Image (cartoon, rainbow over all chains, first blue to last red):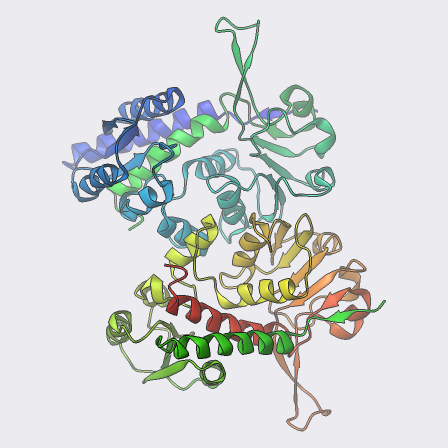
Length: 294
Length: 294
């Protein structure tokens, strides 16, 4: 069967171009340049990379960005003080605290200290609650990116059976809520599966849309997929490879080579969900600047 | 097949007795009597009945209760002023605003003006968000009552396929979140169905636990049920009857007479989910008085 790639790299570029155009119009009208700020605690390699990507995306769309670096010995109190400064800073439209944080700091407490109106990661309980009820909210970046990607490819969700593997607070759970909601990219019948699910294969084989967000490399194999299904792969795993210059290759939660020929649409790894995630953060920051949510 | 009734009347009585005992111990220790307050706008018949039941349940467990009646011409502003008084009143542990409200009042705005720490209905976005993330929260009464009822009958949810029909903000959606969570009365594989679901019967026939919260009288028929399933009926419909003195009879979302013989457990209507709902409000108020959530 011929399958089509859901090209997150292409679509994220399109969306960034649209946002860049809008920002340039805003500035022409004399409006303020949207400003995203990030707090980075310590020097974790992956966190450094993620933050660098976010800063770069800001530059691409014409946002102002600022990075606040704190030592990995910073106290919870001192971190909260920095957050309160950003809450009050009228020049900052939205900000994120890059996770994970050192063990001795309560991530819940940190997230709850962010002003929901500037919580462009959508992690604050107020935003999660508003999203759940169906009120305007900042939606966390990965679920929003997946919805936008499907939407741009005009993938029908209404009435479809969507099976999600993985119940994380930042991907599986919010996706299950959003996809079942009465909305243009919703109205799906959603089954949320996880580590305790029995007969997983029986369920995934029913999926018109299968979303793998379980965090296990190449977990989804061809025997788990209904022919013609849409496959969204949220996983990202670095594996050794002698075929690349770097000596590494990225793999997803889906065994791409054997699953792809069965599908109608599938996201690649890399270049699928990943780039959509960052563009969603940018979209949220623009929405904050335009006061579209609050 | 022999089926067992999930007796909400009995279990709610047990829970109320336990709470009454705890309240009497609290008072013996010189602690304050828990206090639930309710705001009732207008004179809607159903709302009057619900509020009367809540006041009566307070009496049964030894709570103080108070009822604030407002004309159905009250302004949104005046209603919010009453809410702010209750937010500040240290004698009140929790309160509810009985819904529905007159059309010209925004229910969202009213709910958001309630202090989340006193929001024993669990409708405030902060409580919905905390529940969704898995943080301590006031959970709305019907979902909590259903979980407690299943729990008292030691119905296993872990790994079971639970199908919910109906995606309302106060029943279907929160239940889908709670039942799929990593918790003692969770860990189920959950499918959320609704008006847009295709092949509904195919899906409901897979359910180990089937929850009907669709609001259509006797919607669930025997051909939709897997033998041995657990059936939870959230519906409540008043129909004419020549077999009762009142001339009325209550029916659920499930065609009880034909479905019951297929099941392992089933909730009756009345006397199933209904009484559990009120007792959950009482439980939340006790938790507020004991500062267990916040």
